[in-house]
Length: 238
Image 1 (tube, rainbow, N blue to C red):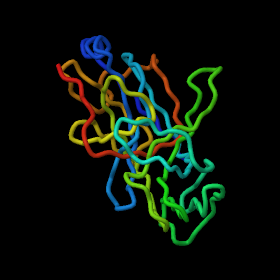
Image 2: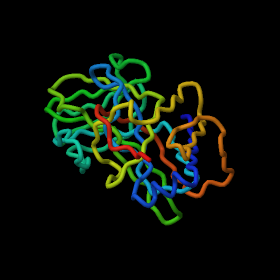
Image 3: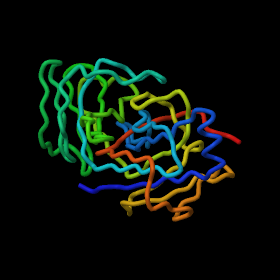
Image 4: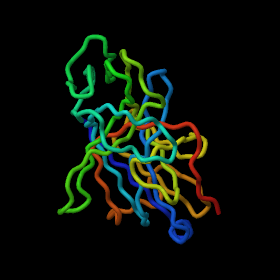
């Protein structure tokens, strides 16, 4: 399992503007949905911001089924079926709401997950979120939910090594969103496990080591990620 580290620096004037207006730094992670669309639809991370923010995640996934349907602005709630860890080339089988198991299946494409359901259900992919402090517990955080409930059958999902970053207020982790990639900053981690990006005082994203801070103030460890969206959340403007 690879560990990814993303450092997000925010310049002073932009930081003051964003903070004064109650904006949070948000992140979602991409996946190919059942139709092969690159999507982001659940907030994987939403936090108050500082001048330097580090996001760390590891490819470690869980899956579950739910009777809940996608609704922009709603929060992904508790599971209707058991949450189980899953690895690539494995399938989560849900023959009924009270039975669920994970196992290898030759039908599942490489670097993908399968969802084999005997009942109509939305599939949820979750990440294991690491503790933010020494007294915090490890929790499973949803990062993807089916755009529509899946009819009984077989569905395949493929995580992509891309993340979306943006600023938004009045939002929290696990919120279902409709995201346009034209209004967020996309970082492609296909051939990398680290990235540095800076949000400048001109309200622009600049990738590279611009303004690199060696001691991040705001640190969050996330283990895993996956997500989707279609329409843009509100973005900060000057």
